[in-house]
Image (tube, rainbow, N blue to C red):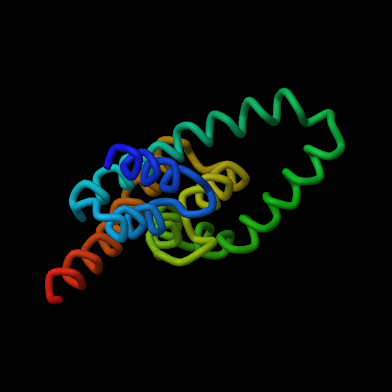
Length: 151
């Protein structure tokens, strides 16, 4: 079970799954819903502070390299195109709603990039992403809990 908990954590902190994939993975592998939720949620909450700081450090260090700059600009444009209208119109509320939708390409990573690119206040963005991740994780965890408890 420890391996499954570690895997839930790794999936939930990765950009390829986040908690919306980590929580179901844990439940499908026999981890209780509450444990899967807690581990996945905590890992997903760590994304904003680690990634936001990481973006800053990476840009300071690697911006001079063409390949880094090219991929950073690509990701920035992608995040900006997906989020700019809602964040400019609704601010932190728009960011929160974007992050809370449990679909691919709408999670904490793109939300963090968008907050960074659109120069949102980092504390405000942290709160918005945290609430969005919490709601998204609750939606996924609740669906799994009620889906499995009726069987």
